[in-house]
Image (cartoon, rainbow, N blue to C red):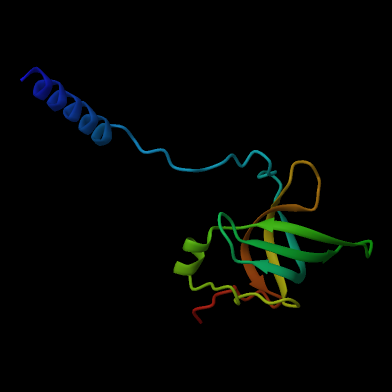
Length: 128
């Protein structure tokens, strides 16, 4: 009887924990990005990685001095982009695009991209 009582209390305690404790959601800090100084980048897609945890655009950008740099740009996750109609072939090597970027605080050519647009300013919208 004592064992049954202990098992019942243990089960009740475990159930209470699962009902009242928030689940931890995976995330990471965005402190590496300079969110206060976004930049517009125009360039050529070198590579499009449709992978988790974040999709990546490798973008060749030519600056005002004519120097070329390859920017590594982190975006959303695949599940969010899939709901927006994106696929592994939405972007192709050679596509000319424009993106808004929160650059890396370090000054390295990289950052977090948003608002992807085709060269003419039309939003990249695979659904039409």
